[in-house]
Length: 102
Image 1 (spheres, helix red, strand yellow):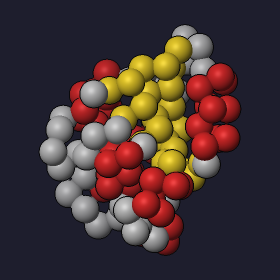
Image 2 (tube, rainbow, N blue to C red):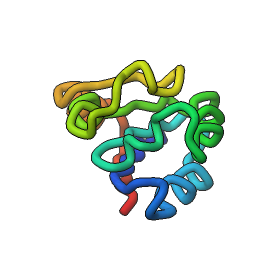
Image 3 (tube, rainbow, N blue to C red):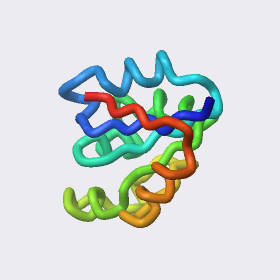
């Protein structure tokens, strides 16, 4: 069963990202929204985790949340696909289940 995992907490404040990465099955998708998009940036303490995740999962980041936090798209880890709100809805309908990590 393919699952879309949605993470909204900063990896620098909560362990939601770590828990998700530990439990997500290969081939599932991960969507970073709200403060979780800080995990999408290159050259951070969690960048290696995200690079490894890109090899096992489809990883997405919500572009409007990058913009809202002043994060330039050029600083996003290679392999992360940016989606808009329409893309968010499309992802939620493409996967059999959606798991939100709080």
